[in-house]
Image 1 (cartoon, rainbow, N blue to C red):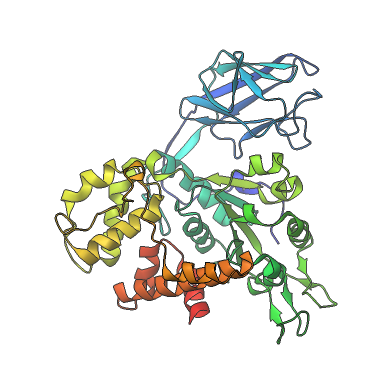
Image 2 (image 1 turned 90 degrees about the vertical axis):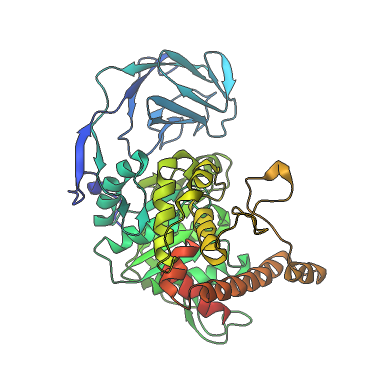
Length: 455
């Protein structure tokens, strides 16, 4: 099991790097309240967002009874300091105005309960932040500044064994980055197992995680290992961990801390050696503050933390990604450069996954202009022209009419969706799993797992 250290921060990187450039930094000084005189510096090289509050894990820990345990988080973004209220009880004010989120340039005041904090730009600058010259990290593609600053961190994380949380909107490539980190590290060649917390009915999640013995419950006809045992020696990606029921979070925490699991119905504990990577589309800071995610599990997992920006915030990657996907499954056709203005002006609510599907559709249907097809599969409702199309299938109608319990209904709909999606995907790519995985935006191992499940 991964050790709780941060040695990866100083590990050497093999990526080609541009000269490290200083980043801007901000100093936060408490000028009123029980902690007057305390201060902290926040810069872009900080591994995790800086947390201010009364909780034991806060970077700037306050004794103010009117402040929340997790009150605000702060991180440098470009030349500004991004402040987010993460669900505090009494709210946050910047220069007297209540805010949920704000971008600070320096010389502002932040009010948390009875505490007043003065923010100034630190003229000495932040710690140097290395940038890579590479345009990809393994199979994860991107040449924007945000990505090039991320790759050296990814390289160090790959060489490490610490737990990692990858956050980002749906479709930003969290799974692809997790697999790339696995493949660049010492566990490459060992199992890379994906467990999606949203794809298993709640009553079966514990068995899926930890396994079960024969006869442990109705339907357990044979003994079966859980994903921890399957990933032994390798990496376990727990996808959408923010959706995991809080009752199971305690059991997951124990498995990670003790590096051992016990199957349902079993009597013995089994030691496992697993590197844990968690991914989520949710704001875990807010989930913790709201009591939906355990604070201790969060800090056990978030020894390192990566936030992937949405595609709309790294538009310089759109052409590179479009050409990358075209090369993957364009079957030697020349790339249609005339579509680039439309691609680069689109808002991409579905992120990289939507772009991949758009290119796949373009390859399959050819010139879409005047063909009756829309490049972006837009909704007919013009108020949602940037959203992917949604069609209610016969399967959904059939399942809804059966009045099943929600977990069972969701399972049936998802299984049918997966069956149709995989069949169509493989037909498009002549059965080539590697090209199909690249087009779909999911990992090759995960595609194989889905195909095996729906056969």
